[in-house]
Structures are given as structure tokens and as C-alpha cells.
Length: 567
Image (cartoon, rainbow, N blue to C red):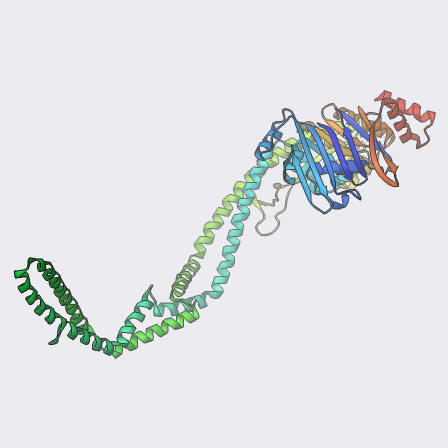
């Protein structure tokens, strides 16, 4: 439950603190006094977006704080743990809105995102604003009311998961079909490009190998001349290095026979002779292999020219050309195998449609069970609210397929679906005996809409067990005896939940367990909203004022006391 709401520098509010109690908390006050501003501030604690325009003129920021008792609430504990926020039996949510446009949120003094606030709010509070009852006039919201009541959340999650799978697979199928069309249009071009590359068929590293071979062939005469010079200098001339070293070795051997210390040097010259002999043999062999082959030279030049043409047309390097060749081959192979691939995916889609159809049918059955329970509960609540001979029905129809792919299969029939399943849900009502139930959106008056909304909220709240329900003028369009019945309904609902209600009707205000009055105060030329909790006598006067206006009459006071006594 909400124990304390603190609001500073928000709109007309300068600084207020409200200590709410158990059961039914009623807020009254003149139009424009700031009653709805309180609920607007409250909505900030539930994750609604803030506007810097709401900061009170002259203030740097608005601060809204709510203190909630959450002792034993396992869902709150789980959310706090998931977001690394310390748990305590008293949960403190704070929003700060800067006049410069920034906004910050805190949960137990730990920074939090608006999504965290929304998750917490969904567990703690149901806030029904002034215009929310108009949602009943939009047929698409009826399934949301039904699903809020039902205990089949897992089935909805399962359906939505299957729906995502089906959509993903159908998108894959459509993309493949589109790609097939594109490839068929480009088939001839791809075939020409691949044939052109294959006609030359460049291999990895071949270009550098050709360049190396060309360099040798183009310089064959120079290589022959230089290798001959080297060979003669090393081996094949009268003053060749080999002959000189052999002569020197003979002389050194003679010296070594006299002085043993020179034997090591003889070994080194022997090694040098062997090395020169080895190099000379290599150069002779190399020289013998050198050939002048103009025909081969021309062939290599032509192939290199063909490589350059491919590079110019297809990527700039032979590596890019080879990559393109692989890609083109893959695309053309794909084109040839499209029928098999499309058939495979189509079979997978058919399987998913049948599977999702079964899931949707199961979800629909769960909804119909919940619908019967809601019909019974709402009908009982409507009787308490003065619609004694009414009829309330929840109608089900299957959605029509929307587009070529947006359907599931149930038996041999195509059924449309959306994010909620295959059901189109609509509320039907009759408020008079003997009349057939008709679509609520066409027949309900403003006062009836308010009572139907209260009846729905009462049924849903009993099932959801939300700690706090907030109603902003749920009494729209009702008065007199019906208003008293609405007040009684709120009183009964408050036995199970903490309720905060804004009202302008004395019959409802008289039901309060805790009565608050909002009023405008002018100080130093500025207007601000204030709120005070009323004593019993003050509450009687406030209710009398709702009856007779600013001038409280004896009859109004008497009537106010009667309302309170009858509550």
C-alpha cells in the first residue's frame, strides 16, 4: 500500500505530503484545485514520462516521492534483485524532473530506469485516469481487459513465441523468393561474368609467379652474360679463385709439415675450396638452363594482360576476382536449387502454421473459460451498481486472414492472427430487461460506461490482487441513487485493496475511510494547491459543500450526515 506521497514544486503544488490509510481514501475539492495534478505526479512514480513544463515556475526541479509497504511481496523482491536494488519492507520511489529537461528516477536511493518503475508499478498500482473509461468504447481494448483477468499468461507468451517463429520463417521464404526473382533477372549477366573468369581461370599466387618468370625471360641475355662472368671468376679461367686457392693450399700444406699450428688454417682453405666448387657447379648448372624463349615470353605477357583486364573489371586484384568467381558460382548453384529450398521452407512454414493454430486454439479455450467468469462477476457487480436487469456477454470471433501470409491453420481452415492470438473479443451489454445484448460501444451511455468500467475493475482487481487501485472520477455520468451504489461498490472493493479515489459526488465522498480536501491557496501573489486530511466534522462540512455549494445549508449538513450514516 501507499503510505506517503510527497510532491515538491510540481505544477501548482509547492510542497505537500499526504499520509494515506488503508481501505478507501477519498479526495475532493473544487474543479481546478489540483486534484488531478496529484495523480499526474503519482503517475511519474509508475514510469510515465515527465515534461520540464511541469516544474513549478521559479523552481529548479520537481521532486515526487512515494513510500510503499511491500513486506512479503515476492514479485517486488524479484524485480529489485534483478536490477541490483537493495530490498527493504518500505519501498521508496523518487522522481526528479529538472526545469532544463532532464529526469532521474531512484528506487531505494538506487538509480533506476523508467522501465524498472513501470515493472514495479504494474505489480503495485492500477491507476484509472479520467478518460480511461473511454477505452471501453474501443473494441480492440476488450481483449486486454479479458487477458488482464485470465490466468493464462504463459499461453500468451507461448503463442507470441510461435508467432515470431512463423513470421521469421515467412519473411525468410519471401526474401528467398525475391532473391530468386532477382537472380533470374541477373542470371545471364552472372553466367557471362563467370564464363569470362573461367576462360582465363586465374589461380591463387599465379600472378606473382608469372611476374617472376617474366622477369627472368626478359633478362635472359643479361643473366647468361653475368653468370658466365661469375663462373669464369670462380672456376673457369687461369686466375680463377679455385685455382689460386688450390695452389695456396699446396704451399700451406708444406708449411704445416714444418709448423703444426698451421694445420687448422689448411682445413679452412679446404672448406673454402669446397664452397667455391659447390657455388661454381650451381652457377654452371644455372647458366646451362638459361634459355631465350620468345614464344613462351609472349604467352606469359598475354596471360598477364588477361589478368589485368579481369582485375580492371572485377575488383582490382586477382584475389578479388577469385572471390567473385566463388560467389558467382554459389549464386548460380543457388538458382538451380531454388525449388528445393523453397519447398523445404514452405513445408517448415506449413508445420509452424499448424502448430501455432493448435496453440492459438488452446489459448482461445482458456479465454472462453475466463470470459464466463468475468461475465458472471461483472453481472453481479452491475446489479450492485443499479443495472439490475442487465446482460453482459463477451463475444468471440476468429480473425480474418490479413494478407497472403498472416494466417494459421486450424484443420483445413485459414484463420487470421495478431499478437494476441486468433480471437476478436467484444463486450456486449443490455441494460434493460427483455432486450438482446448489443455491442457495448454502440449502446452504453456515459454513466453506464463508468459503471461497467468499475464493475470490470472490481472483477479484475479481485483476481489480480493489486495492493493499490486509483480512480480519477470513476463517477462520470452518474448521480443520485446510482452514485450511492457506486460509492458502496468502491467501499466493498476497498475491503480487499487500498483505494484512492477522486470524486465530486457527495454520495461517494461519504463512503470515505480517509477523506482529503484539495484547495487553492494564494500566498504573496502566487497560487498553489494544498491538501489536508479532514476530521469527521470537516468531512461532513465538505460533503455538505458538495451538496449545496459554497453556502452550506442546514439541510445540506443533515443530508451529509445521512450519507455518512448510511455508508
